[in-house]
Length: 157
Image (cartoon, rainbow, N blue to C red):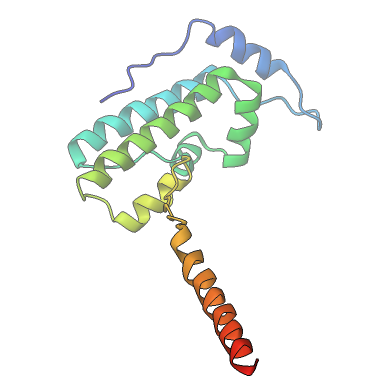
């Protein structure tokens, strides 16, 4: 289940543009073609390990440790580079797929699976049938009280 993705042909141009850009403090970006290649390698390696190990999941935390930056740095790079955004999107898709597949096969704890899938936009819904039968007893009770008052009034007259 390898991602089969290689570095895009436009990668060199995109990375050079980012690497030469300067952030608000005057430091050049650490995002290079090598970093993007490392990130794709991580995704491909994790996927092949997951297939043989029965569910090792790729995470943004492990990706950040692999390429030697913080998650915040990765999110900033994703804003600057479509190529790096594609890496994070692919990681999210791989993670959601693994959660679904392994959750359905009971390989993952169901509570953890549900929690993690909520980060991918999946939510648990409960349908509540709002039936008008609840109103009926209240109204019939009110009608009985009104009838009782009519009977009491008639009895007094």
